[in-house]
Image 1 (cartoon, helix red, strand yellow):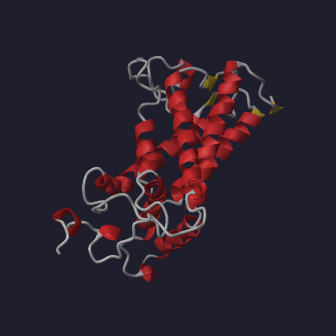
Image 2 (cartoon, one colour; image 1 turned 90 degrees about the vertical axis):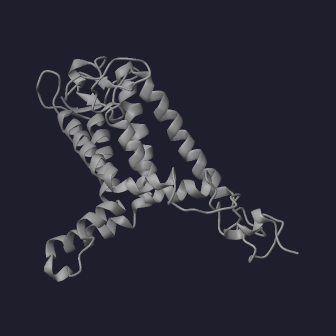
Image 3 (cartoon, helix red, strand yellow; image 1 turned 90 degrees about the horizontal axis):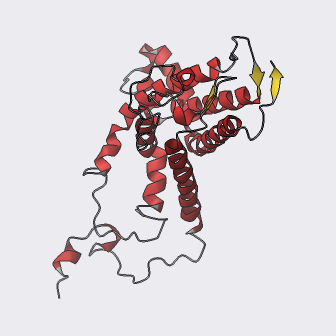
Length: 273
């Protein structure tokens, strides 16, 4: 008796040539724990970042030039003039974040990141959730169709993310100058600089960055500089997953610290000035 047409067209674990097991998995360990923890981590960041992006308040400390990365560059006409280092040209409406020029690209850079896509494929998309756990999809097309084909644009978002990292670096350096023009150094500077350094570590450890440095080279010996760069990037590329998660935490912490100072919840701990 032949299988129904729908079953004959199925792929993956549902294909006719695979063993027909009614259970989703025969694993007896807590295989669901890792996907749940990852989903909770993603959800925490998405909820926090969304609330803060549309809050449009408590993002800048003029006394010390502290600008949260969630609002950089601040290019809305509603931005504080002191925080608008690159002008004001976006309309001030509630549904448009003050940093609308950068946030969409940073989001797409993260969404298309090789680590992140692997993480949410297993957890959100469940393709598959874990090893030896059948996914709930009857067919598999990979990244050949919309919307997953958009993942192939990751290299272009990398270039934009690098530019935004330069802007964040500028913000961190500017924060060493107080409102009166004198030099100042406080805990906020440590927070901002640490966040920028880790963002650079995440950005430069990107697989696309590694490809830019040494991809398409047939003879490394003829390109010693690019080979050296490729080698160094390859070393930190092994920590790309770690930096991906750490920077989610440091972004939230940096934003929360600047927000707390701007709201007057507590003063900045000053070391100089």
